[in-house]
Image 1 (cartoon, rainbow, N blue to C red):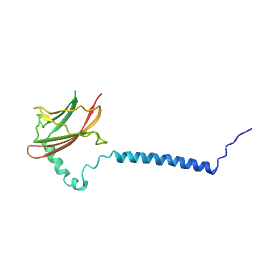
Image 2: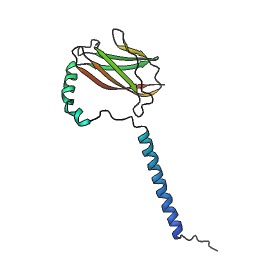
Image 3: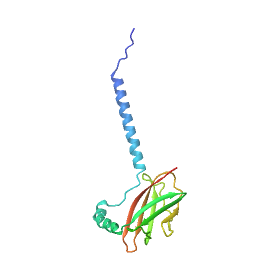
Image 4: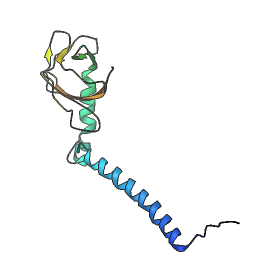
Amino acid sequence: MTNQFKLTGWHVLAIFVGAFGIIIGVNVALAWNAVKTFPGLQVDNSYIASQTFDVRREAQEALGWAVETSHDDGLLELAITDAKGYPVQPAHLEAKVGRTTTERDDHTPDFRFDGRAFVAEDALAPGYWNIWLTAQAQDGTAFEQRLELYVGE
């Protein structure tokens, strides 16, 4: 005796609705999380910002500054050096530390210059961090750079 399953129109409809229901549900969940974690725009108007980008970049490159960052024993360090490798102390320095995908962990450490580098006490959790550095040279030239930092376990 054979017991054959008969595929009816209702079965096909249920399979169709179920499959597309899963696809739509996953898409809605992904879109919801993408919008919820979006940190916002970098600039209000990218076209206007692009008009002066090359001039600002050339002025920044003419400074010849290089920046290295490290984190050890709860101490965050930003070492800015000139083209000859000497430490640089800008007229103004500000750095925001945070994660790439969310603003929840964003903060601005209180850096102080120790004669060699800028240091701040900051117990960063393990993982990848971004440092958005904004500085101004003694002659008024703006310096902006995003640095990546990995903090190990």
